[in-house]
Image 1 (tube, rainbow, N blue to C red):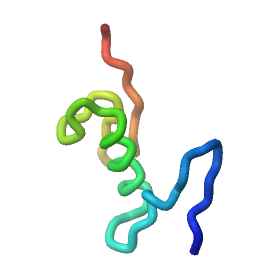
Image 2 (image 1 turned 90 degrees about the horizontal axis):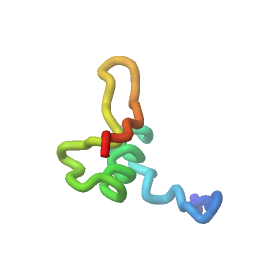
Image 3 (image 1 turned 120 degrees about the horizontal axis):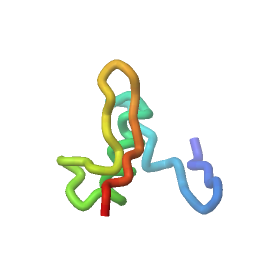
Length: 58
């Protein structure tokens, strides 16, 4: 399966057989935008609901 490109962003980094696709994509995104991906400030996990994008106060 070839990776698709939409708006200049490839989805191949989000493909995985070991983790749910959404979790893998969120972790990839966190690695790109979070200062410390292990302690996310922008993309927060809401247990049993999903994810929330939070803009920290400057």
